[in-house]
Image 1 (cartoon, rainbow, N blue to C red):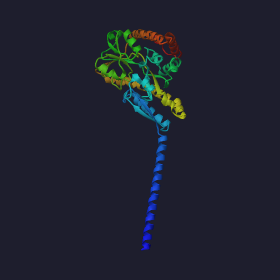
Image 2: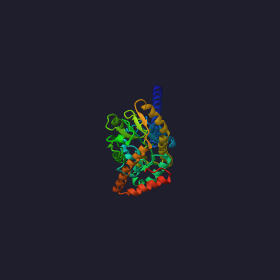
Image 3: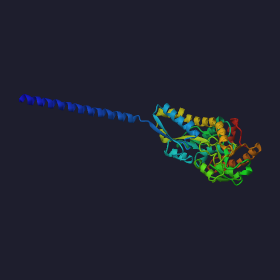
Image 4: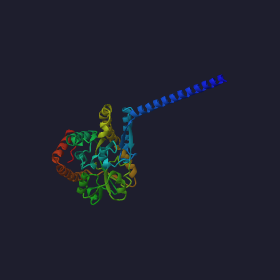
Length: 365
């Protein structure tokens, strides 16, 4: 009997020991898993939110931001994860500067014509009529030098990437425009102060409409014409409400990609170097290349789209001269505005013309 009791106690002891051992092993395993989770958290990818005000079907999406996302993630070995938001889902084109500066998202493309009343004002000289309408690489060089002299020092609240330009803007209209006289009293979209002054000089009526609202404005006859990029007009289909297209090469939009400064300042030094030397210049390069790549295709596309219901119109040289004469009013207004802002407007225009001549580019008048 005593033997049976001793045997039973031995079994109980062994079972207890096994249970304690298993419990200890489980606790140790949980501790290891916890450490691994902490290690994973410590190397978690840095998220970079990018807002594209253009639609997901547009060239800025498939030629620029989507390839740039892949390049960023590859060059940083996935230490930076890029989240793309197309179609102005985080903010419209006319709020990019404030949005990025305030941290709503980390990277955006500043279309400087929307920021006339900000520290981006000097860059808006590139939006003046017939300012930078030829040879994109040389035009970029002019804009870069001009910005470095007159703007960049005051824009230290964001990280500036190299500037670039769109393709030359043409005119989309609900009715044929073959001469300046056809624009008399027409309601014309004006996306900037410079465009508004130009429209007034053409005896039109300027109406301020953002990029995102242009299609509806043309459709509802809120405006009857719009200066716009032939490339960028494909995605939102501006040719549907405005199938008469005049090839005037009026102006370009200077673009400056920007990054939130706090985001940049918090990056590890090695990642800062990669962005400075490779990734930020690459974004600008992709924008420039996209406009060059898409230009010829865009005219072919527009020609097909407006066949039998619209027309692509090439104004005569004489008519172009009249448009250029009207453009002087916008330049005069820009000089006056620059003076009011504390700049020397005439000096700035003289410097801009000098830079154009140094690059062998045509002057606007």
